[in-house]
Length: 68
Image (cartoon, rainbow, N blue to C red; front, side, top):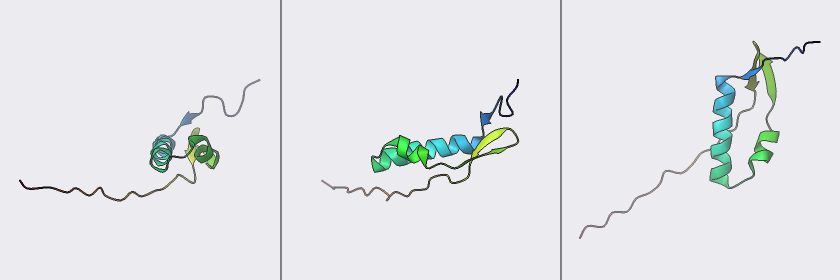
């Protein structure tokens, strides 16, 4: 008996969503399992896609220079 979902792979979009999720959890110092559990997944052409990938923004670092 074969499964309909046999041989599924992550899409490039899902891989990007995974990397964004990792960056977000590191930036916000949160547990990645909580962020991953919020994902809504769908199958498109035998690939897994994330229909609600995470978003976040970071402030640009400020640099101070001292002239001697």
